[in-house]
Image 1: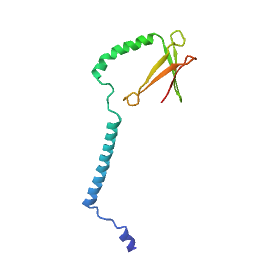
Image 2 (image 1 turned 90 degrees about the horizontal axis):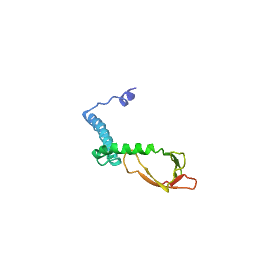
Image 3 (image 1 turned 120 degrees about the vertical axis):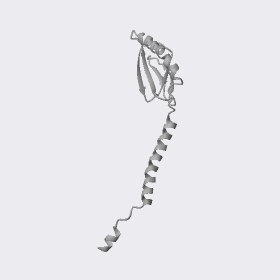
Image 4 (image 1 turned 135 degrees about the vertical axis):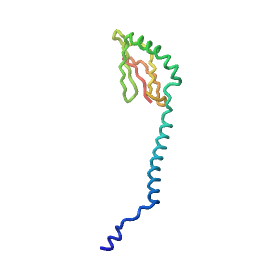
Amino acid sequence: MQTLRSIFQPREFTGKHMLATMVAFFGVIIAVNLVMARFAITTWSGLVVPNTYVASQEFNEKAAEARAIDALGYRMKLIPNVDGLEIDFIDSAGNLAIADSIIAELRRPVGEHQDRHMVLTRDPDGIYRGAGE
């Protein structure tokens, strides 16, 4: 019985143990903060528009343009597929709209590093199709 007590005898918690515990605790916190800061800096610049003042001045103008386009009654049906993108473009009378091609700008809500531009050409069936990357 004496042997078991000597094996499982509590050891003294010294200042060195406390120092090692504190260094390990704060070391993990600092390491995680550095990793998160690196990801935050390298993944997105935070820039949505080059000049926010100019963008705010142009807002009403762009909103009026959007309302004017909406008043024309054009409707689009976007059909994504494995080959790319299809657009069914209909005018206000319900007919297929006639244009040689459509340039589609596929934008991410934040950042421009994954924005894509596609040229969709009109097929004989009236559907505009463009190949994806």
